[in-house]
Length: 143
Length: 436
Image (cartoon, rainbow over all chains, first blue to last red; front, top):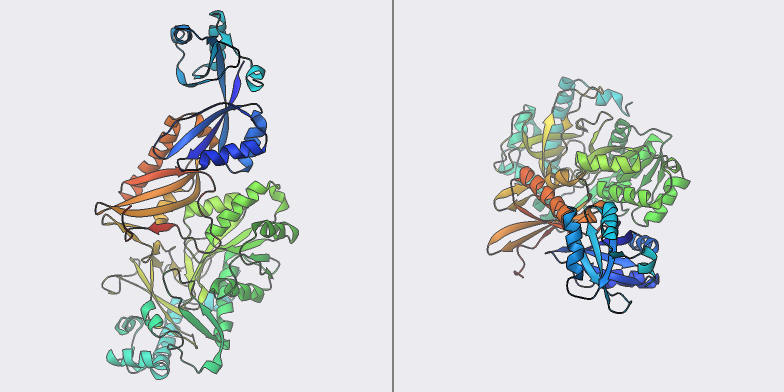
């Protein structure tokens, strides 16, 4: 149930994101979801891709600092309150959300979010018990 | 092991008697053969070596500076006719126009002797295979070590710098046991060896003779860890001859000075007053045997200390502490003296960052500020911004405690800072540039 997310250290200067994504393109890696936040002089680029292992290898070869992290992808109805319900389930179990980002789900009328939580292992069970749909890695990679 | 045991283990009183004899002769030699010294010594009333009664009388001889040598560029400081000169070298010019060094046959002979001494003291033996990864050319480092090592009987590979893939191939294929390089290039080669992925038993490296720039103990440890060798430092200046002026023995507790050929003193860098034995100050050196281009009381601008205690290795020649830095390299930031070596000691070995760094000094609103750029190498720290910010804070705090100065720490991508094959240039001083 856990999705492999790639984190890349990026200096905050023009062209870095272009360089990194071109490196992935050359290896025919397709990006499913992406997030980057800005601080004053560096950022962490987070990516969900179709071929995580290949992506890590090619980025390391290009000299980048890269790590893999397990995250969850949840899917919900695109209606008011759906996302709030998910957050409530996690909150009630004392699970902290460290960061998250939404991404495009091709299934019509549904919304998806990538979640990095403090306790990935147990969160899967908590969410499933509350009948919240968690996407399988293959589903996300092959989306 | 010694290269010239009798000289290297000479009793101090005998050594000092020899130095006094040579010094008096050298004063005469300079006074009679070099117009520059004829004038300088004459003005100071030292018209003959007989005026020097004891070694401490050396303080009455005027000092010679790099500018004096430059003012007499290129051959004004020669004591012999040009036809006696068989080799010309020039300094790397880290701090401006190069200074020239000219050698007679006897000078070259003496030079290879002192390099051989330093190399044997460091542990080099006849059966060693040395790769010299210093740039061959005008720079004294490469040819200096080259002839000294050949004199011992070592196999010498004049690899020069560059083409690291080839450097590593020679390490492996030629069974290289010894490396000659600048510490920064050795550090870089270490990284390459690690990245190349060959097991360490593909390499036979055991000894490094490093010089031409300072090396902190922390950086040395890093080099030893990646290249699996024992690293030793040696020291020299083109103005004095080149490498071999001093070097570490296997015990690595200071650099033994070739005191029979060079007379070192420590003076206050501002007043030029001689300082008591054991004080830290600027190193001033007189060549006692140099024929082509002798210098009296040359100001090295290196800040160090001399230890006259005999060493456990048996050598009696004075030991010089690793220079803390050249006064030329010293930065004054908000009135605080900062040596790049202090920053290096603080950074090397810190978790998460690489050993390479760059210092950028700027002036904003009439205030100096120092930016320290370091490479993030640990991917484990990408979990959250909090961890990266924490790393940055740790580096900042460590620098604050070492320098007593606020710095701006910037994390940059691995391998994005420049790697150096010769002397590293890690300081970018933009204070005299227009503000951005």
